[in-house]
Image (tube, rainbow, N blue to C red; front, side, top):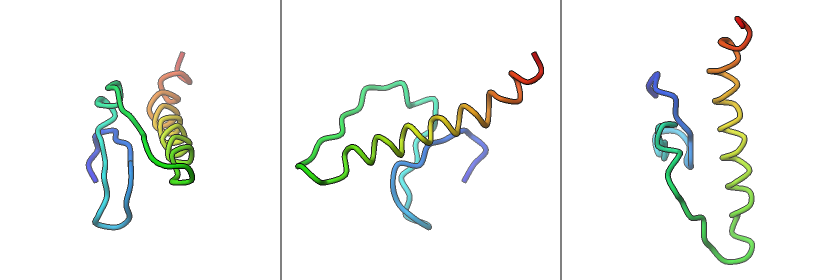
Length: 64
C-alpha cells in the first residue's frame, strides 16, 4: 500500500481493489439483485471515507 490516501473497495490480502481517494468524486453505480450486499457496500464505503477524512483533516483542524 502506498502513502496516497486511498479507499479499499474489495478484497483481502494480495487481491484487493483500491482506488485513490482523489478519484472518489466520480459517478459510480452499485447494481445487483436483492440481497447481494449493495447497502452493506455503501456502508463500508461511507465508513472508509469518514475514516479517511478524520485521519487527514483532524490534525489540520486541531491546529486552528
